[in-house]
Length: 348
Image (cartoon, rainbow, N blue to C red; front, side):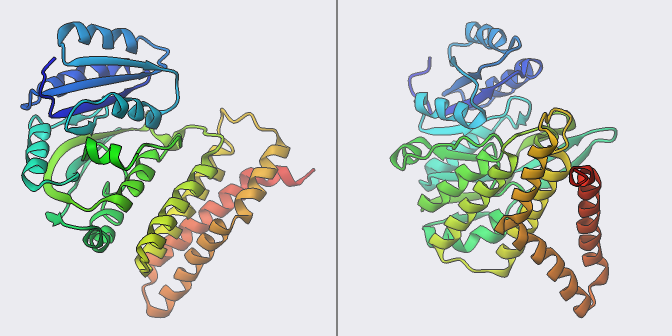
């Protein structure tokens, strides 16, 4: 094991056997050699652990941490707890990092003496026809939390991947430990909550315009396609974390209101249209009734629906018919589809 570890690469592993060899080749081919690779097996039920052990034999920079299944957030926490590097980088095993990613980020963070760095990526959706979107940022050095607040909306909130995702960011380990920053236990969107907690403490940061990562979206692994019993509660928790940060910053901006309400509306959509009627959802009709009532009576839901419909009416007033018509069509499509699926619940 290299004594002078610059970057600890933390990789959560859960039933990803088919991606492990390619992912490990990507990381071990990095131009920066003073690294450690922490493979955190999160209770895999396939042969992922065996494949990880094989890589330990090939390179002494690789370590395996085994734990009971708890989700990607808890796996990353286990990696942070064992990390020995100056910086921590979270890699997803089914993606591809540019060969200079670790060297470029760590040298930049050394040069600028920052605790956090964010960079651009390619978002590649795999399907019948592959599509690629380049997600990048405007270069910026942030010297204090007030400057971060001023940059947040344009550079992070409204920029794809700016707030969510940990793999287009690098963190100083000492900073994470000093502020006891760890992932929470949400099954989805725990990355975003983690970063919201980071931003509250962050003073020194660097945003790079470089594109250093290929992020692959596979429909079979999309979190929207999974049944998650507490999905709605997770959306509520994420919204509450946003509200906490904005209250701390005293940040008031119409763009924030618009973003949060439209996003929560989509969360309600996912909860009712797909999650509640998912093939793996074993709830009986009474349980579905309770969930429908709980979701539709929540303050965040009511505010989101009011916001979507109000924005439509305002858009007609200013003449922006086409764009806002799409919003209204989306709203009524969602409403009719949900009620169509749920109508049998009200016959009893």
